[in-house]
Image (cartoon, rainbow, N blue to C red; front, top):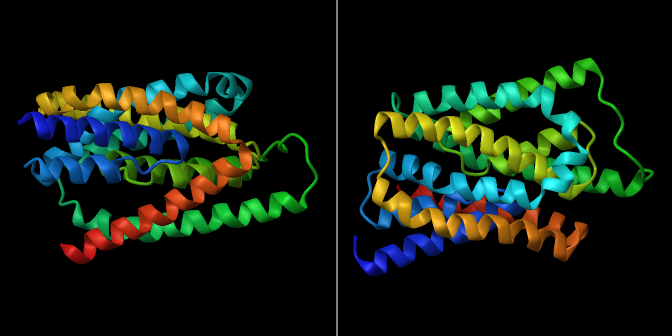
Length: 256
């Protein structure tokens, strides 16, 4: 690895950490950067997951207040997050990624549309705490989170957008709380996947080490940045990231 490649990978990881803290999609920076550095598709995917994991933890720390205030939301979605992350990472090393990659832009575009619709509905609704979801809604959200987690363990680009849609479906209204919980569940998914990739030796340890420092700085800074710009701008940033992620994934598909 040349010094220029190392600088490029660290910068991509920092940008990915910021994006993941805001809405997700950080893989769309780190994955192509690793491909440009000469990694194979599977190695780039695995290395990206390992490298962004500390940044995800840093962004959870940045949102620690919101996560603590909504910790009762953690008990139902953590199990499908862990199970799905394990299943998705095992699938990655056993099947070609093209099948999931083909669906990714449409899933993210659909979730971004849902998120935009939720914002319009919220503006017309009364302010106040989120209503308690019923058993049926929790069951549907758990199944949706399991599907998101499988995709997250497999490829992961845009899982933040999908998880924000799940949390919105459950009635959560605070964008910062949504981001905090989304980052926590994303960390759970990626922790399982990264552990499996390291165990199987699928990642490039040298590249991952270079990218970890950038991911940590970006993850924590992204959480602070989202709180600084306020709820409405943070929501707008989520939508922009969703649309950009869709466009980048479609361009990636057409170019391949």
